[in-house]
Length: 142
Picture: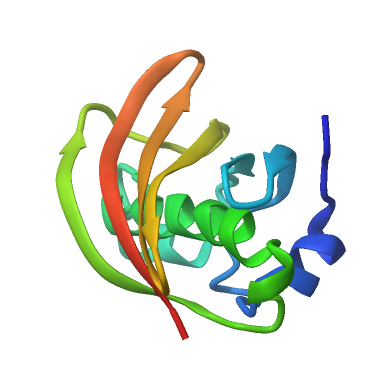
């Protein structure tokens, strides 16, 4: 297993606090897949307004976290080092559960297709083994 701490993640993708949504990578294979985690705390900035009486991580931020994990997989390839992976599209996105303070979110993105600078990742976010978000993410390397 290959793992990355937060500083190693920051060497691969350009995201920074407060928008870096991956705490560590448990395993990855360049160009193939990455599995990471987001440890959600009550101190997340978005909980101030989403929602004050029932804090829930916004679904779009979960999709972004999945994209960041996928970016680790694709940007860790030698030919993509120093580049940026941009969103090209989001398909088949389903929200199946809530993410709340205290959750440890498992983020897995598998690269299922790539042709030139465009690719597609199959992404799943889960908490305690239960899928909370699934999506197909299209990316473009710039």
